[in-house]
Image 1 (cartoon, each protein chain N blue to C red):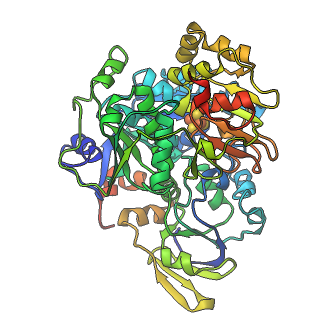
Image 2: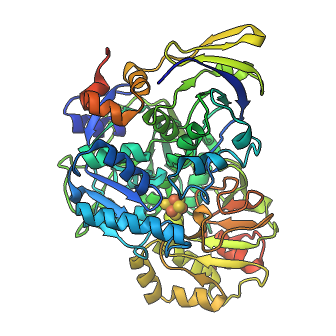
Length: 418
Length: 173
Ligand code: SF4
């Protein structure tokens, strides 16, 4: 009996557990990427034990691909050698896609599972009803060696969403509305639960956009109950069954319940330098932009690219703005190509990058210079995130970003979506 | 080891994020000295060169929010910072700091009272925080026993080696 988070953790430890308790749990899969694997390997080596189960470890090279400098290339070479040495077959070379997209797409996430990752956006997998939390490298190294980790059973902040998205409004706008409503620290140490009729109708991709940004409110996990939509997505894809079926909250006690209706929601923009600094797009129209970036684990999936392509079809990107578009995975890239989206982007004047994180963490492929300004579909607008500390980052949905690329300044996408 | 420390206060506001603690463009190394060189340089350019062993960072709400990069507390520790006191911490940062044996205390009252440059004494074991120049003493929220023990043995790796995972649910050591 309890929240979704309590139900999953109780099922795993075999007795009812409640918020505040400390539990040690077996982990189904552990993920790390090119930035977090090296420190995790250092921690793992200090333990002087073999890898608990190499088939349960996933490593993706995605943050800086292909390598941008000799130092980065050397670090990535070390990761490849480690994977070979300990026999990690679930190794995704650069170009396969963003770690989180691969975890879901390649079937490493199942409803009721416990998955941890050396990346804060590991919370994304909550979209499939998995307890998935980001951790640091020492924790990841410990999972490599033991297959276990500890959690403080979290309290829960619950969102109940009603209504239907209007013209030009997407799951990204809903997630920005949530962050605005409870603030960037609104769910610190808490599980976030998403429910209500609107959430039930969302696709897996849209649900991932919600869960992805649970961490932007400080959340430990971002849980959505698995249902028929989840099962349809996972059929032929998922590699295991946790045996828990679809877990759901049972007589839960929440720290806070937030009811939101999206009928009147408009496209939103998170203004620098905090994700909860959210305004309707109509209030920031005309802010000049040096760069537009569409992609990432938040909004780099096929439906996001389809939306951007609808806006960019037959249009030309402003000569004063560079537009970078990066599909979240190779599979998505191929599908986008088959649908003609990639050609639309290139004809409009965009750079289309090989799947990965791109400029999202300010290391390569479109970093920002002094006093530059960008509109992106990313999840974070922190100072210095995309390059120079004086640069400004605005966050919005893929249609808003695409419309802004055409005009060279922040634009309302609704005029472009007929 | 978690010995009491005396140093100066480096005061920070709310929501100091991991990109500010160690920007993505610098966290591609695991070299502690290199990380220390850039720690908090975006928010306090004088911090990396000015911080002295034993100094204490005092932060606002949600300190360390953002990414899971362990480079963030490592950089703070490598720069010589003895301890962090804040109103509240972001969850992954808190856990990472504990894991590497960097004492970290939640104490809204001390965070409210301290000014940049104040002298401060912190005893991570008792949770006692003193601002001697102001004649103020605070008691931080006590840490769970296993968390204290992690800090005492020098980090989570050593803790698991000594006590195994069972140690995590022990209430006495
Ligand atoms: S796309 Fe951005 S937020 Fe997502 S994993 Fe990569 S760097 Fe992190």
